[in-house]
Image (cartoon, rainbow, N blue to C red; front, side, top):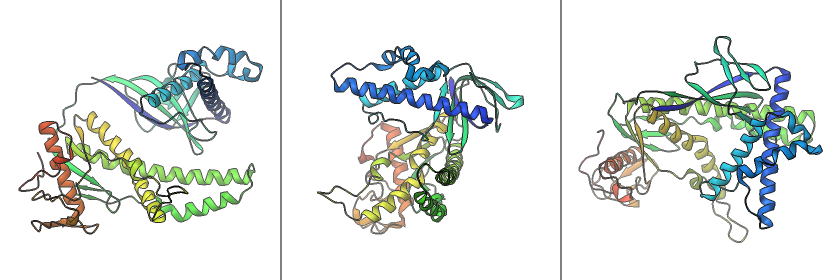
Length: 399
């Protein structure tokens, strides 16, 4: 089978190379925004959607335009990749997989991509980028496979290179036949059906005081001043530090789980809906807005969506699989007798069945229900909430 894998490294450009990075990222952003504005104007006037081919045919005209002649000094692959990204965003919108494409803002997710032409000199820890030359990077691992494309991206005040490769491997077979159910939460990051408890990282709580202080300092600085830019960089470094710590935590937890279990059963959570604002509108204002705002911060700080994505690709790479089941009633169902009632869980931590009297930690009870629903789906391929409420004499631990 073919495996595509990305290898991410911190690059160390010279001052001249960093100026080129910023110029290429600016051109990538400019072409995206100009093509998007053109598509919006054409739609407003009733004209047909151009798509990638139509906008790519305009690039030679833009390069000859006196106002945008500077585009002729940018690698053509970068400009075309920007248009391909916009075309993919439109397709995702038309197929209702994402929202309408947005304009890119300067300083936010600055990046550009080379689909070909890059090459590695691993012994000397450097990479060749077209029109830039050899750029040193911080080698932390060996790159495996043939390079398919290279993306340069800025995060805070640092630049990173992401090298996507492709290689042939034998179909993996997971050495451990175990199966486990996972209940995600806020008080506990994850509770496994075998009783394992993973404490939350609390990345925001550990840095919240400093974060507020830096945000206040930034708000006091005059826009466009050098002091404001210094304050912005300090804030960006703190955000990057929090993100790095969260990613490190999620990678370690997901790797441990995928190595220990061939099948992982999780709830198919709608994190975006769960973390939506409760503010409401002027006509119909929301209730408990402050409490819901705090809960939303805690939910987003956990990184559930990223964790589920990591589980899926790591399980797939090790020969395992991730099974998603509907989240309805998992916290209200007794894992022993199958009785479903909101009265079974009157507190956050304790579950006590009003039918059979079974009592245990609520998260562990939910994890066992998730595991049983995963067994049901694997057995018959169903995907309904009735799997959770199925009667069982004893909680299932493993397959």
